[in-house]
Every structure is written in structure tokens, then in C-alpha cells.
Length: 261
Image (cartoon, rainbow, N blue to C red; front, top):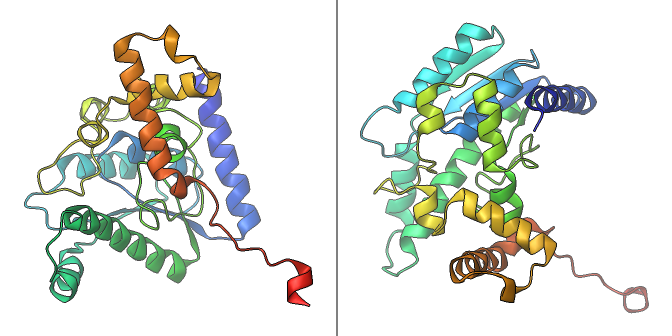
């Protein structure tokens, strides 16, 4: 991949998009992860006003990587403004109101609530300032296995890196000199109390899922695969089918003209 050309293309695309939208700037959430770090750097390169917002929820300690990245960006770009808003009180209040039924899906539901509270916060500031909310999902997450929360981190105005795989995002991170600790950190969505990684949740590595996504596009026949490859491909197919509702437009019930009349 020609990293310099990809970087220039994304930055140019962002500039063109914001000018057409008549918006004043960009806002995005940062987590100390490689995806949000790369996106926030690319957005900062546009020179448009950029808010990077950290939104801890029920976290016992400061996110050191997120703070380091924020300081890194602020030193390089005068258009970057860093905010931290602790959303624990909002989350706790929601739990007190609704947390009255014990079931196996409760943990996932509450993890998704965290993501949606963050989305609400991003759009609150975006509305006040006439900014665009920028997504940080990559290609495998957004269009492969649907690894995002519907109307949570999936609720954004534009997706700068959604046509890049995790491996390609890592190449960009290296080219942009993103902090080494961030480049080496295990990917995690930060929504779980046990700090499980993305790959723990997915049951496969990003590299394996990237491979499976390519095989699915190529319509590779199962009988040409090894047992391990077959299991990885099946895992990808199951995740894709389970989450396809996130990746397609909202279904509309079309009413025939002869019924409407």
C-alpha cells in the first residue's frame, strides 16, 4: 500500500466533504486505540477545528494512552482541542432506572448502552458547534463482521478509514508515527468490565478475519481449505450473517401505488 498517497487522499476527501456540508469542524471520540488515533491524526491534518473527546465510563484509572495521544496531537496541530467528559453518572442513572431484570443478554445490552451514551455526547457537542461526527471503524469491523454498536459507535456522519483493513490502518499508524505503545496495544472497545480485547470477543484475530473476508469475496470453495481455514471462514460467515442488519440500509416497507390510491 502506498501510505503517503492514501493519507493525502483521505485528508483531501475530508476537506472536500466538510466544505460541501457547510460544517465548522470535526469531532470524534478517542480511546487510545490505533483506529481512533489514526483517524484523529488524519482529521487534524485538515486544519479544520477538531475536538477529540475522551469519554470514560466506570473506569478505575486514567487512560494513559489516550492522554498521551491527545498531548501528541496538540503539540503538532493548533486546531486540535481535547475534552474529557466522564459519563459514569449518566450510565449509572440509566442502570438504576432499567436494571431490574436478570437475563443472559444484560451484559451485552449494557455494553451497548455505554457506546450509545458516547454517541449522544458526541452529537451534543456536534450540534452546538455545527461539527461533523467522525467514525473510527475499519473495513472488517464496518462491512465484514459488523463489530460495532448500532446507533452507538456506528452512529456517525462519515467514515474516513472504513475502506481500510486493520492491517492497512497499522501501516498508516507507522507512517504517521503514532505512539509506539498504541501501535502495539491489543485492540479493545473498552465496553466491558473485564477489559476483554476485540479479538477475545470476535473469537478470531483481525488478520484471520481479513483473510476470511477476502475468501468470501472470491467465493473460495470450502473443499480447497484446511480445517483451520474452514473454521475461520465459518466464524466470519456467522458473524457477518448475525450482524448484517447493521451493515445494510434500514428496510423500508414500500407501499404499491395501487394500494395507496
